[in-house]
Image (cartoon, rainbow, N blue to C red; front, side, top):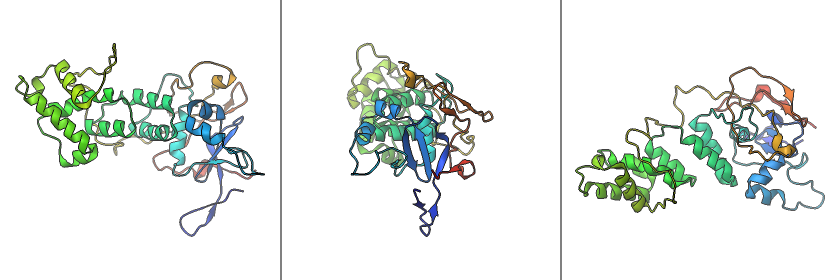
Length: 308
């Protein structure tokens, strides 16, 4: 009913229901590539001004409302795997447990930034802080998606304390302004009464970095301790060859937010490795036990032809 075309010869492909996030009881339809998603409008209107504006925009005469079954909301330049990762934030089977890779959180962060999901950005920030990210990568990522700059103080400090200056490749990643500011902070540390930046007390180096980068620390904040030997590790990329493939994302059996609960839907989840289970929610939404594979795995075998 909604033909799509591949880039090779414009061959029509079938639109399929997503194997996890085509939910019974959903009232908002998305089309991402050749997959149809049916989820709950509530989350998108509550969390995102970007979606509120677009879902409320009037349609042409005789056209169904945007996001309806006959007029799905088409997401261009989004991969189905990344959208399923994003939906996992809301449809979680376990609260306060998130077990995802840096690659997963980066994909979620990009969409949250593009679509103005501020609470999702805060969630991603908290989860990324649990990883030992290589400092240049962390600075590049956090600045690109406008995360709290106070969280970068340990990364700036590590670049200031190491013996070697910023290299050309690192400078390109960081951008000229950031690279020059780091060089300035290193110089101020070296010209101090300490013989090397490594001899600086943590609090002194933190003060220099805040001053150079113009980072304002609110009263009572505890976001900027500089602990020697912590904060940045040997992470060298978004995903290493040895990293296990991302396992299926499970849809949540809990829709309490739709039933009047005041609790946050950003409670937590895990990427389970168990077998698929099926059931139903209290409001009739189907609980699907498998999710969209990511990392280039094919979803063709698990999709259902969409023809209604």
